[in-house]
Amino acid sequence: MNAQELWKTAYHQLELQLDRASFETWLRGASLLAVDGDVFVIGVRNDYAREMLQHRLYRNVRRVLSDVTGRPVELRFEVNKAPVPQMATKEDALVQMPLFQFMARQEPIETPVPLHQQILRPERAPLPDSDLNGKYTFERFIPGNENQMVFAAAQAVADMPGGTYNPFFIYGGVGLGKTHLLQAIAHRCRMRNQRAIYVPSEVFINDLVDAIRQKTTAMFRDKYRSCDVLLVDDIQFIAGKESSQEEFFHTFNALYTFNKQVVLASDRPPRDLQTLEARLRSRFEGGLVIDIQAPELETRTAILYQWAKESNVSLQPSTCEMIASKARTNVRELEGIFNQIVATIRLSGSTITPMLTDDILDGYRRPRHRVTLKQVLETVAGYHGLSIEDLAGPKRNGPINQARQIAMFLAREYTTASLPQIGDAFGGRRHSTVLHSCSKVEEEIQTSDAYAGVVNYLRERLVKLK
Ligand code: ADP
Ligand code: MG
Image 1 (cartoon, rainbow, N blue to C red):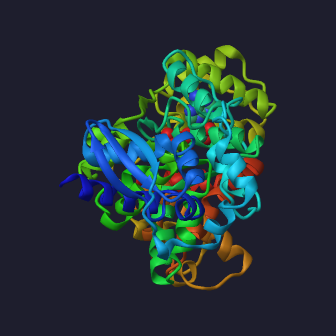
Image 2: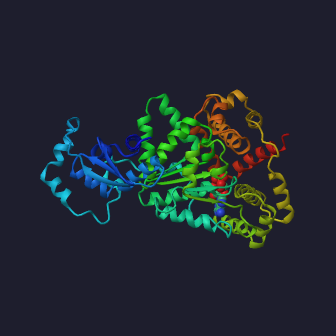
Image 3: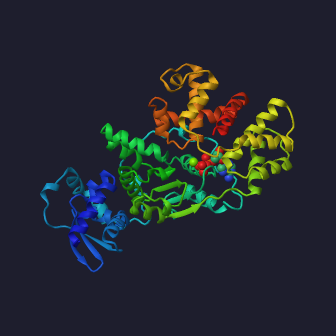
């Protein structure tokens, strides 16, 4: 590509990435006047645009142009004296007004106002907290020695989004606390009234598909590009999905250009995301990539101890240690075991003995083979005396609803099906319905021992299936 073509490409990327208002006001019609060594000389329409670009948008434009060129470049903005009649807009008239002329002569502002505050944007209602789990906070996360670094980094990101660690990429096995940390970041940012959007990547993908189908892609873009912090969970599901990757790439660039924070979680490091486009992979690797480790014995004990305290169950430290030494699994399983122990203590009034712990751990063993959606439907329907058609169909009475929620929850826990696949198995319900059901069940398990007992019983049935 020659220099003019490089500039054209960068110009179009900037058009995509900058907010419309700033692009239209400052960059529309800008042209490449000359290349002077590493310096690209860009002609702009007036003094005001030159000032804004030189002092406030310099880094954004340079980053895009350097990307396109493949080497670091510098910029100089000059007022393009050639008349460009098609650009005589209202704004042009506006900048000829004395105030603007005065501003254009001002010294550059020392500490520029954050860009997102300069750009006019409609006021948006704050995000509802219902999409976050209230318990996934930093205060409730016990890092242990093995996860000190990822814990510290997550807090640094939450305290200074868009700072040094951008993007921030956490990877590790299931049930180790990735979602917990992502949501903790979101909680903290929202406390400062920053707009933090948390989405599982499946939801991002589905939103995009819906937007394309309903021709509302502009709204989709607006939603995902207008936040201060975007947290995408389980990003591995986006690998191999071309149009979603493409859109995510642009979303990512748009946010990154404005120093907005992007946080990602995945079950494996970027390099192992086989079907991920190279340009996305290199973006992910360009930030801070940290793995999250399985908790050591000491950490597992501390976690159990905290949970016992929170649920007002008296578990001696020695008992916690005994359970922790036997449950060498991930934290999600530890949680399942803990809930079952609590239910046992409450139901039987018994104290917890080593033998009882063994029994519970035996019962909780995970299935060696993943179970199928059909097996989940059959097991849950059978237990509740329902037909599979009832369970998967449109009926909405209380008991059916509850059984259906449990079935969705177990499908998420024990099968490899994605949220949309689970939704399909339940008569074409939406992924968000599945997600909602799962959190509902989690909540119920916490509040009702009888309910937890039913879920655990069904778990055992599924575990024992061949
Ligand atoms: P992942 O997203 O990595 O699969 P989650 O974030 O869903 O894992 O964690 C599973 C469960 O374990 C959640 O209930 C979470 O609160 C809990 N958990 C994980 N790690 C910790 C930790 N270090 N301290 C306290 N709770 C934890
Ligand atoms: Mg998770």
